[in-house]
Image 1 (tube, rainbow, N blue to C red):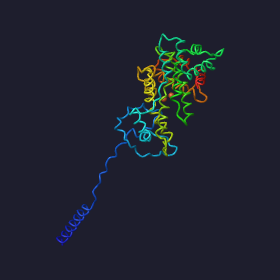
Image 2 (cartoon, rainbow, N blue to C red; image 1 turned 90 degrees about the vertical axis):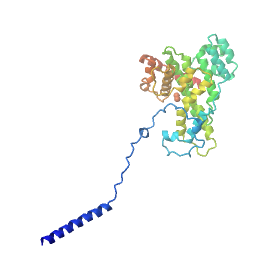
Image 3 (cartoon, rainbow, N blue to C red; image 1 turned 60 degrees about the vertical axis):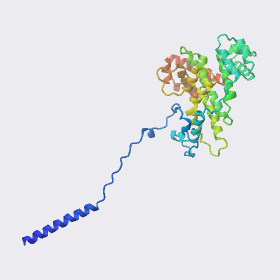
Image 4 (cartoon, rainbow, N blue to C red; image 1 turned 30 degrees about the horizontal axis):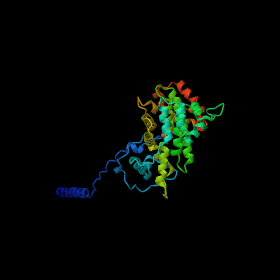
Length: 361
Ligand SMILES: [Fe+2]
Ligand SMILES: [Fe+2]
């Protein structure tokens, strides 16, 4: 009996063991799930309000000749950095800039001569007037501005010599650059409103740049105002290029894409334009550097003046122009070592600067 019970127990144990082995063989193997890599910080970073300064463009051969098919952004969505960077218009503009194939307006001969004469310490009003009167458009502008409310003449100024003396060499130089800008740069057809806003912004920035420069030792106010005038001149050049590139195309880039491309490239193109016109390298550097985010210690003062003038021009041209919102804590204020009193002395000139910008219009 004991032997029988022992045999039954042994059989049960053997059966249980065989069942376990069979089940173990049928169990599916565990699949190892690959670790999910962490998201790159760049993909999480929201687009910044101001674009980074234009990075050096890739070599021409790196830009594909046939851009990727156009992807239409969702209606009403802002153009994000990725949408802009991959857009065919961006690639086409980058190619043209890289190949030096943008239509750059040429400085008017008369304007070039006026700039050269104004920089000559031996030049007087009579010689400068003789140079100006060769150009009817320039003569007309100088007389008109000398008679405008901004200069409030007691008697109408009818002679060019008197107009030159009333305005001063710095303003005459400014007007010569303005006339070239109007005649040759700000002529994008169909975009007149935009161009006129840009013109007004430039004229206001020129006024502020001149006033800021008066408070900074070693900066010529006349040169500073030319920087203010020209700081955004890459924009109309690029606007024209966008029009040319999209001419005859059924589907055009969204305005947000066009704006983002212009924002990205305008400092580089503006700097090139200024160098082509033969203006001083410090002016080209100020134009090219007017959106550099961080003003490193020892940044050229003219770059700081242009940045501050740009910020003040944006503030002053806002409807209502609230004095409490003036950009008095702009990094350029500290970089230039301006005191609060000096900044206030610039701000107090705002109504006069706005009036002068209207006279230039
Ligand atoms: Fe700008
Ligand atoms: Fe600007």
